[in-house]
Length: 329
Image (cartoon, rainbow, N blue to C red; front, side, top):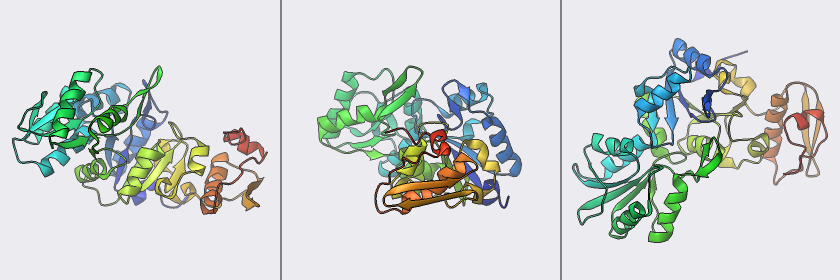
């Protein structure tokens, strides 16, 4: 099997929704994978773009789902946003908070003063998702930002997965302020680097591995921070998405789920795989052979990423259908 991922990395930076859990259920095998990492001496950090909950609440939620977690193991975009503010402001500066009490608490924790109304002494605005955010809050932020206040967005995720489907995320409201102020925020969460940097610092890691289900946040965020990454297919990303990923959002490893952290690293790398012959022929992918469909996907990635342009993936091999790659997109 060769060296396992746990043998190569001293910390796992784990995304949550779509990676460790889906909705109200833990991903099968997630609890065991986390415990295997701890038993091996690998540090675990749960890294979330969600700025609405405190580390204590996140840890409690994970524990309820059967994945043991401590508040100190949680890194949130609220913490990263507060760290960005602390680097750029004098102690005691007023910060207008658009977000929950958890975000305000992180602002307080770094020695700044959270407020809810813009005044002449407001030095910054920090924006995180809150279900109670209203027009009046956005108006206060617009006044402060137009007045020269530093603007920090905890994340710019346009949508938020929920039981009823995709709902407006923090990024949708950030965009509203962009339009209203003609300004751009400093972004703290993935794929920007502050949250990754805070997670690495918190873990005391020298060589961490990012594990996530989204190319546009987890994998791109890892690339931006010059970190290796493992993409899992238990959340947002589909086989088609990973095949068509741009150079800045291609994972180092590819697996079905988080249990892959206990598996051999070489087997998880995109590239040629035993049992499969994959080649590009006149702009069309040709597939022959037999074996694990995920190995086929890894081989397809190598061919697709090396191509000069998009390839026709319409090969009728049964494994292509298993991967969902035969239907028109």
